Image (cartoon, rainbow, N blue to C red; front, side, top):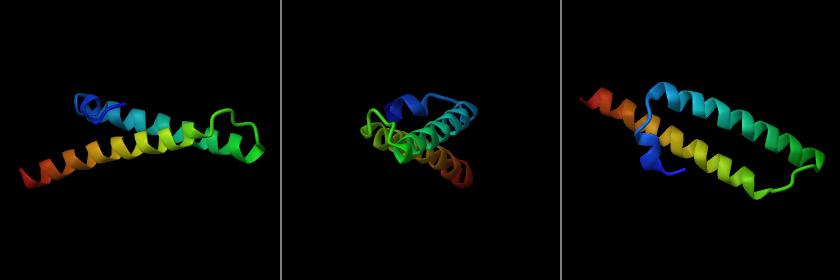
Length: 67
């Protein structure tokens, strides 16, 4: 997922995506703790996607407050 793609989406879509990613991260962490995870690198990818979404949301909040 690229930041440019995220910037094209609405705030509601980003919030929904953030919620889905957080659920996915929880499930991956649970799988890791039980030893059932197939791809441990997926945790890192989901964490980075969460960070990208949060970055775009924060950019929009800063633009609204500055402008």
